[in-house]
Length: 319
Image 1 (cartoon, rainbow, N blue to C red):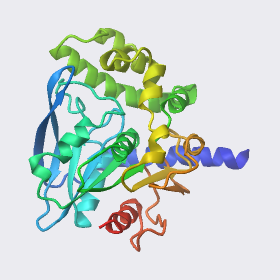
Image 2 (cartoon, rainbow, N blue to C red):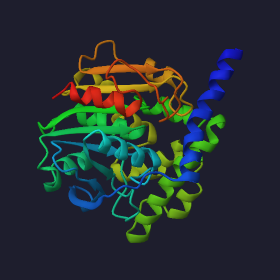
Image 3 (cartoon, rainbow, N blue to C red):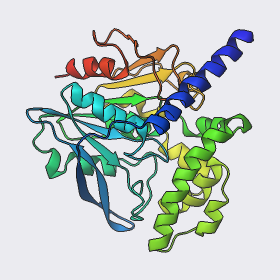
Image 4 (cartoon, one colour):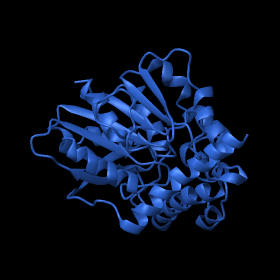
């Protein structure tokens, strides 16, 4: 019991301290170009997508970065990953899923791959021979959906970091009283996206009602379900959860799980891994919090230590 409590506290510290450090000291901005393309949505029509493109002269590979729920390309983990990947020789596109840029065009759901397909197929990425997708937290959930669907043949592989596989179980976990601060952080980001949409067009649930939401369950019930045609939040979890698709992945996929993650419990991931998933490589990482891994992380994937060093080795094994 004492050891479990200690690991629990370590998970919180490993998760929170890097975020505090990034807020106090900032993160590398680097040089990037504003990027945009358009995706045609069957319900709302053309939707403009934006992001941050970092070209790298001579690079033949580009990594599409997908932020987590309520995040954006401005999130520290996206900025840090883009900077490190540039050092390793990759161009990057940090994609804002629809609405994450607060443009008010629309808002995304976590099973929606249309934005990723549009980004990968955009003219700005046409020059790259190899495309990889790196999704953080719920962004990894979207990335795994891409891996289970027909995609551009240039897409060599997908990485999901600290990613839940079963939406209803993680909703119950994050909605528990002990996760209040994390839940508020995520919901604040989602509410800002919804308010921007509500300022531009009519929405199914009034913005003021969404502002009063205190649970992920209510966000999914009041925002996601009516926008995407689900009968309830539970119905959306059943349809959008990637867990049932993991046995049929169409491209190599890597899932990295933090043992001490206070937002996406490792045990919940274990429970929903299929017995057979030939396209999926899974690593459970010790001494790691949510999107926070030790600098000397060594999973045997590369001589380079650390999260991005290991991912780089896995990418290189695919080309």
